[in-house]
Image (cartoon, rainbow, N blue to C red):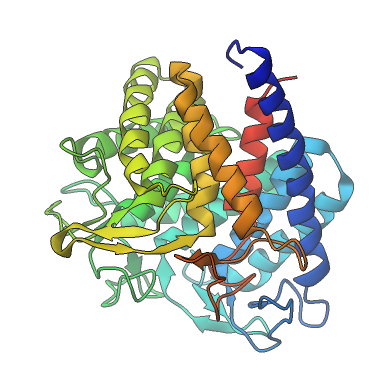
Length: 404
């Protein structure tokens, strides 16, 4: 931790204490409200009233993120109850999501665990690698590492573009080209995206912690190069999101949450492989990207969702996950620069979360709030996309970055 005066030290002490408490509150929520004891795994959907949808489809991303969160919690505090939940997530992924015939994982299964959407979305493979590698750290379960490595091999075999580099988005079950490459309806149907590349490098870096392999390290370096070459807009330092196979950008939207997430996460990936040149490059990028993301901050400390430059339209919603990433991204910028303005932005993000995002009555975090701070309706408390990932990770990162 950087040197600080007594006021800052007191703020950091309070910050750490509060997020430590919130971390265990998040985990308690998922243990109490999301475990499907009847059909296995976890419910595919839980609403703001904590009512589970018994028939909702279950997502590979959701289960991968649950696996990561509870494995990371166990690796943090060694409480066996978290390892039990992580084991449950691992076994469900192994038994229901892994395609035993063609490799990879299905996008979704139905409530009973049968294949529902067989599409091989590389983003989902990445999150399963992320969770499986963390679980291997927690459990030393060789089967988890073997599955993680098989997914890594599948990504490299089928998704890697040997001509123009980078990774293609999605495939059919048999690894043929898919017509619909999108993660969600709001995304552009393009062959390469920043979002998927960000989570591939995140997954590969976590895998590298337990699989110290030169080829894997080389792939992480190549991904750092790709971000440096294609994904950063050097005029604005926002991230470019969508491309065709030859890296022709399809401009459209600025995602403030992805900006601030990438700001710290790419630096961390360089640090994991201990590559000094890329560490220095991404520390510099971390500040400039964090500064660009600051454009998305409102006066209440919250971060707006997205901005469309072509028609100057701000999406006046504040989703929960960008607030979590802002906690880390601005804190990281403060650690690099010792500029207290970044620390205050991190603290303000946490204050916004406490006031508007945490459901203090029923637990966990709301999906988000509207411009007037009203809760966004008809959104999941837990679901295909709403998982204990961004929020638990933000808590863990802040705790670890504030030393005793």
